[in-house]
Length: 121
Image 1 (spheres, rainbow, N blue to C red):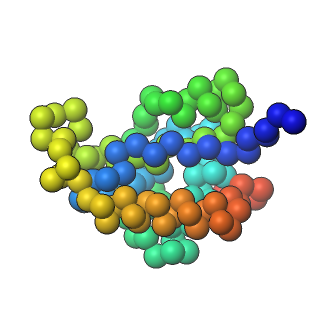
Image 2 (cartoon, rainbow, N blue to C red; image 1 turned 45 degrees about the vertical axis):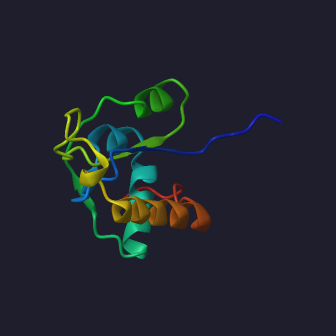
Image 3 (tube, one colour; image 1 turned 60 degrees about the vertical axis):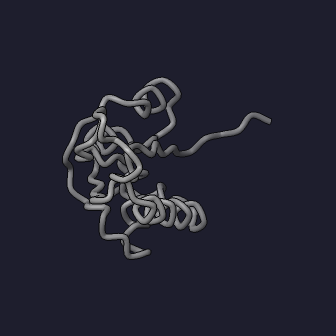
């Protein structure tokens, strides 16, 4: 039996010590229900670093999943990570706490069943 994928999540640069994850514009346009359900999960577990406002538009691996595979996929990305693609992108500028917060959101989202059936508000 072939698996049927109903949603996807791309985690990118989510270890920033100053974690702030906003709605990514392509994710909101192509996978609004998945995006909203992830940010709802963050609110439910008290992770305030998920900020439900549109900010960046990213060309990333979530695009072919949405466009070609037809799997609604959200890119969770802290695109304000100032050390991206520099020699200072080192563990000292990252945070296990940030990773744990994102992990808590994803675990809660998966355990409660991604609420992607309803339209976003």
